[in-house]
Structure formats: C-alpha cells, structure tokens
Length: 183
View 1: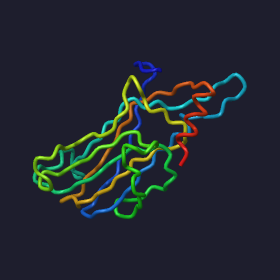
View 2: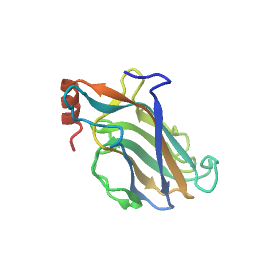
View 3: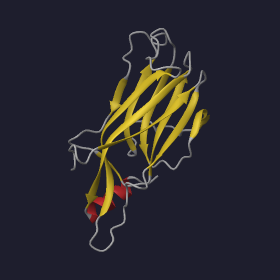
View 4: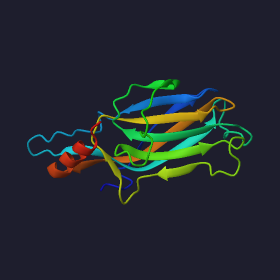
C-alpha cells in the first residue's frame, strides 16, 4: 500500500448538532479519487483509508465540549450508504448501520458528555482502520453518520478527518471489494 509522505493526503467534513436528539448525515464525495473500472491496461483505483480522527468541539469557538455538558452520540464513517445528507434530527438511520458488524463501517466511536454518564470513557473508539490494514473504498461516497441519543447541552461540532491515499487494485481484489461494498 502507498502509506508514505508522498502519497497520503487528508479529507474532512463536519456536522453540527443542536440541542435535540436524532440522526444526522454528512457526505464526502470521492468520485475524483475512486475509479473502480479497469480500462485496457489501466487498473482500477480505490481510496485506502489508514486512519480516522473524530473530534467534538464547542460550535462557537475552538474549545472542547465543557466537562459539565450533557450529551451522548454514536458516530461512524460509512462507505457508500446511498443516503442523502441530513441535519441532526432530520436524518433516519437504519438499525445496525453504526455497528462494527456492518461491512460498510470504516470507523466508529461513542461520545459521552461528562454530565450524561460520569465515569464512562469519552471518546470510545470501537472500530478503526490501520496503516497495516486500511479500509479500501471503491464507491463514490463515504458518510459521517451521527446518532445523538441524549441531547447536547449546547450546539456541538462533530468533525472527522481521514488519512488516505489512492491505491491501484488488481481485478480480483476490485471485484471482491465491489461485492462487499454494495448497499
């Protein structure tokens, strides 16, 4: 794989939570990085995601979410879910989409505000790709998905940053990835 300073680049997006509960989705278009069709001698390309970084911050400045704030959320980065972007509270996620057992799940974490569940780990990463075994996306989109189960005390910005690189894929690997990344 192409994990080196020359080939690795970053993609990011964010979604704003309000003081309500519900689901939210923010999409990242990957069509300029992914080409699953081999043409002649040219092989197909995918996007290898090596690391994913999640961040929760106060939406009015650069400070972290205050320790006394309430709020819990499950956040995930999903490959090609085929769902339109939606603000928190207006989206609708199917059961199990943010579970580690979902083949389209790239990375996931749980967040607990200090006033919500004192003593719980925050954040708790339950799924993450690695430099040794990246998640290779061969579809045109990934989505930051949020399920806010306990409303945040104040508006909170949830951000994600992907450390990734374009990779060339042989036909059998490409076919296998296309099958597993089908909604």
